[in-house]
Image (cartoon, rainbow, N blue to C red; front, side, top):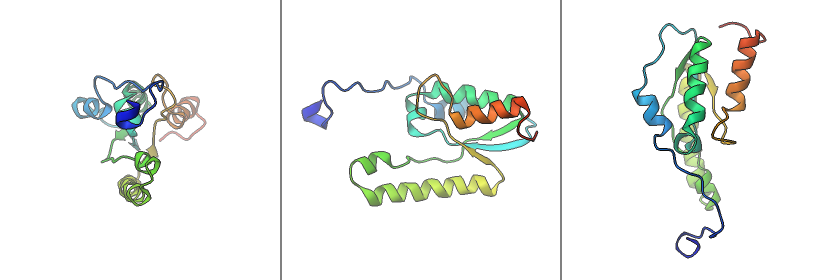
Length: 140
């Protein structure tokens, strides 16, 4: 791998999930009658490597009364940035910002899972759910 694609032979690559979060999202049935609109941006890592963190997060959010949507998403641009393609990274960031803006205009709170660990939902989602459950944030 090191000679072909420049990845050190002792580097451990993340495993890819059998089913991506986007595939799971497309086939699931949404909960009805939700009050708090949120937009979930899954990130490439979560979509392909750790979808188990996003699916349960959606379920928790829906049980907490959220209307969860996953708007159109593009890569955040980190691979382009890592490769030195600054303009390519900026263009992806602009596209992603436009996608997020559509959710904001629709009154949705923007949430994104972390790529910290495949079995852990994002701190932002976890925090929102915990605060909602504990009554520290207003009920939607």
